[in-house]
Image (cartoon, rainbow, N blue to C red; front, side):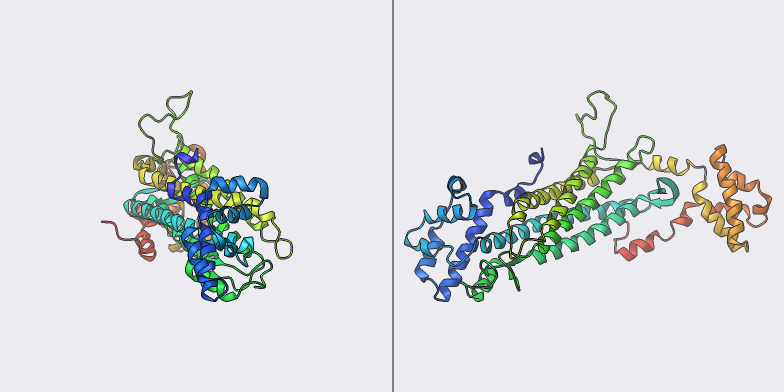
Length: 434
């Protein structure tokens, strides 16, 4: 199903064609580096650079016999070469090529994911500015708390995505390493200068030390960052789903002409996109667990990580890319219902302003404990008798002896709770509302 939605660029990165193309780029760069140091003839390196080619179909055919994909790749390429084929893959071990190429793939994927995070950040920033003053009730434990604004929710998410973008960029930097250090990392058959030159040509850095492989903490960090990113998207989706409940209906994800919500109930408008994001986030988080399991390998390497990585890297990158673009669509097209927000804000008949009254009494000289007990008693009656909290307060002469009706009015004004919203926006660096 994701094939219908995944951006072609991200899907292309993880094709076998692109994987083997990266193999070839590493091999050709190695030939040039070795030729520059007199390890192989320059003419051979030039011929390899010009003539080397492969086909995925032929590699797969050879692999049926070799049961080894890199050997199948090198033999396929050798078929496109002449005598110079003897210098192709000269002095290299499989994972000199595989891991260096994998770093190129992960770096390429991170660049596209960074674009997606940037697009979502821009959407959230726009919504945060648009709804800076859209008042709604805040909720803690799912219970009405105090007034906030919808813009603050978007601003919170925007700030979180900025952190995720930095994490992604750091992870991309930490995976941008290559290695051509041989079978156990000792450079037994290649000068370390070859590794340095190959990495320079490919836009990577040489790993300071390696075994047969790059160490998997780098890769685990990368997938863990994708899991963190997916979890933020899950968080946003869960909030939208909660606010779309029928009895709440403060926001609603886009619902398009001709879309159907249920095969049985024509009235349904379900938050299916957000539910899908929540479900896919579970897969990405599970993949992070597999990446962490790949860190401890036997001695200088075993192959237990390889099969898992063929799944978790493309799947995680493609899923997060898809989730980002789905969330951009949801945020951009989100229906907002301020009238329902106002209705819900008033649903508890003023109880959301209880702390305002509490603090006002404390400012008048009451102890916090005594004032709390007075206010809580009226709050419980308001809950149980479905009465106006304000009217119950006005019936209490003790409270009226400390607070005038004008002072009570100020306690029940949401502007009092929201007077520092502009300050929060200023600290975040969000542009002022126009």
